Length: 340
Image (cartoon, rainbow, N blue to C red):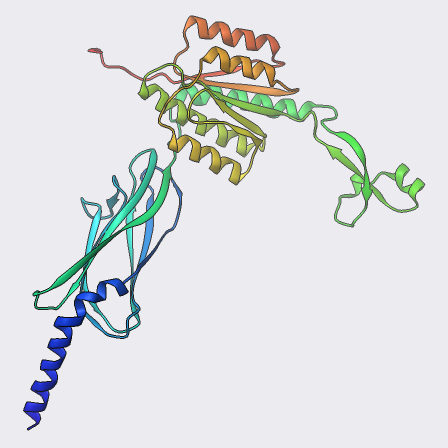
């Protein structure tokens, strides 16, 4: 008798599984996150996926593929996808992690996943596919050209020296109430005596050192332009280390960035560089004209370009006429095969 009851119960489960399970796919959302939006070339990126059964019934057969963004390589594998086979109890979830790398500079968008459900005997099944939305930018690598690094190190060192020897790099624009957090040297005793309370000087660093990184994208091969982006990254990190505010301008799709410094400023620049398709929109001559129009006191210039032509060197010489200091020219030279 018990055997017949068990057999009947099993038959009911099989019938329900056959009739209902194919509809289960609509109850299987996939939630996902990536641990970064900006990465180094070859850096490991962590993807976390959570497949949720929000149905009141168990799903006995779930099979799904997850494809990472095109160009990604999953750690320990030669492909960019993983497969999973499992069952899910009612209102349960399957959480998992995939580690992958993105090999070179660029923007990597949207993976995809496929979920298949049905009866475990394979008579019926339904497949759902959706995007795994993402936009991960891989920044340029740091420049390792010893000649460029030598020129850059000496020039940034000169800026630091100039900052140190300025007699008064600040301008007093007024006084504020003393809050107890300011150093004693900022207290203005004359203003304090007149006001009958402690007052501190409000300073504006109007003549402090600043810089502009000028990227020429109007000439050179793609390889030289790629190296130019590496040089821009290296220059910006050197200026960040010295806490020197810098502006970035280009004549191409790397865009522009207002003067500033700090993590957010640097990350925005790295995003611009990482997403560049190496297009140019205007001439180097026009780029130099912009530098001249927007010049300001105590500004240093870093010109980053493929090897300059004679006409482009004349444009740099014209900017030098308006600059207080020598201009740092960093040319992205690449080795060429003898056959080229």
